[in-house]
Amino acid sequence: MKNIKTAISIKKPLFDQADALANELNMSRSSLFALAVKELILRHNKQKMLKDLNAAYDEIPDSKEETLRTHMRSQHYEQVKDQW
Image (cartoon, rainbow, N blue to C red; front, side):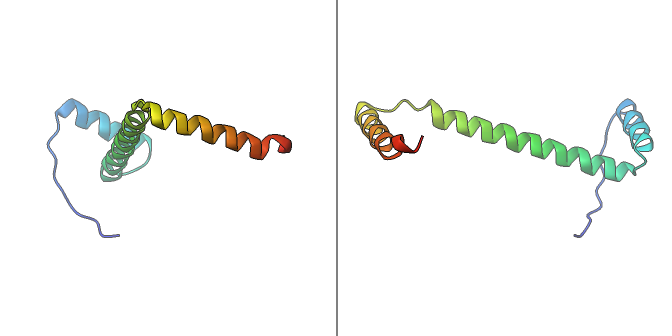
């Protein structure tokens, strides 16, 4: 995969902490920053997925949909009751 060189500006105390952590982990600062961005993207995607799932499950079914669900549950139960 192709690497892209970039420049960022951060406060000196944060740079010093990142530099110390990179040394402690025996990795380059570039690798540390790339790992940090990757972790942030993963966390953001998980939070977005959770938000989307919560929004989907927050929808209250109307009475017609609830009647259909009840009917489907009873049909499902009839199909599997002897398997338990």
